[in-house]
Length: 112
Length: 114
Image 1 (cartoon, rainbow over the protein chains, first blue to last red):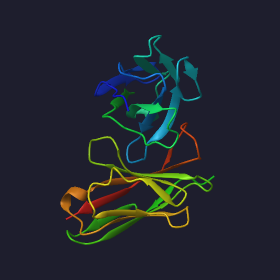
Image 2 (tube, rainbow over the protein chains, first blue to last red; image 1 turned 90 degrees about the vertical axis):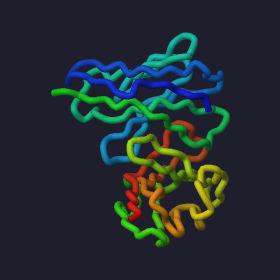
Image 3 (cartoon, one colour; image 1 turned 60 degrees about the vertical axis):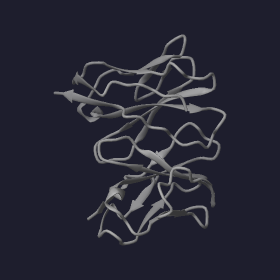
């Protein structure tokens, strides 16, 4: 799987938007961009995924660059419960059963 | 509905002991994954099952690690002759067949080897 690069940590104020960046310059045409997050003492949980177009769901939005070499996870109003490690992961759409390859992720701290 | 459950949640073992970690996936989920997460790092893949077939075990770090899923539902990860470097959180995840959309993770088992 292609590699992703994320900042080690970010800080945000409560109720403000948060933009978490991810670089994936070697992404292939069949790679989906997935985001998972891991709250303290829990297993990771799925947040969102996309291929080319921007995506929205109840948890977040995913903005994908036109050349697909980077993406941004957007939390519209951060809450204290959003404090977690956020992982950006590429998954090959042609390999439905493949594992997730986690990097170091971005630790998001939310200040009240 | 019920999510993925793992037991025990915490396990302390003396070096050299054998341990068995259990995973109960979401009912009907065909795919099951085991991951190992060292302190301060992201999870790393260990092995993958589709039903009872172990299709990928490339991430198992040594022949002391063994996983099984005999009836295609519950899975057990066994570690023989545990070493201190085996101390980690072991995560289990399940997903629907042919689904690259989402893996559902359990809370993990924290293994400490003394």
